[in-house]
Image (cartoon, rainbow, N blue to C red; front, top):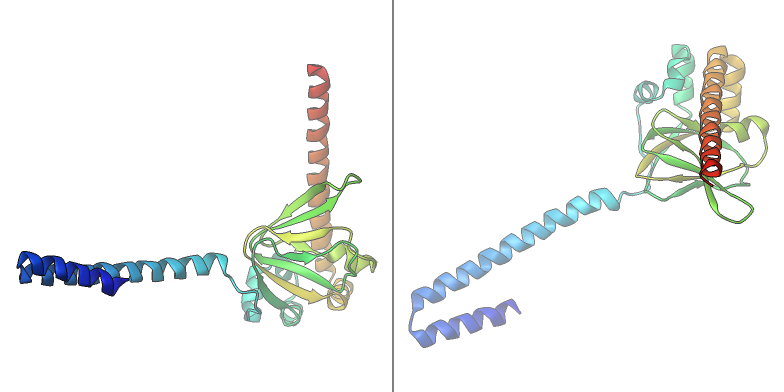
Length: 213
């Protein structure tokens, strides 16, 4: 296609008898082709970095993991280092299902980057979002503690980096490190307050609708 265009330009300029114009047209055409190729190359690289994020293991230094995870900050330096060494980190794309309801809980998950949605379905089969969790949050701990299947799905909302720790190591940590148990208790209390607040907002919204009728 490009060669045919150049031939047409050469023929047109030869007919007019202007060899200089031929040279200008041909070089200008190749210059535009070079710019277009360069622009598409950079555009593809940019889009790939955003939307084609590979779901691969990412290595974190144990000290970096300790800094990135508030849960470890509650532990003694020795316990934090040992716990961080048990974590395997993975990078997940957006809309990736991490956990499914009724799966058995064999890991606890730490969000290092990104956001996830905790969801379930009502009796009519409609999706219900129970919570949105971001960096520094933990999920999957309830199933690991109770040794029962998962009660919800967890799905990423954006490209997300998650570290997972085997459930047995997490439970052992709670037994040996009292401050880890206190951190988890505060986390549960925070989530309970969030649920209560949403219920109050939903109740007030329902009352407003009834009053409007």
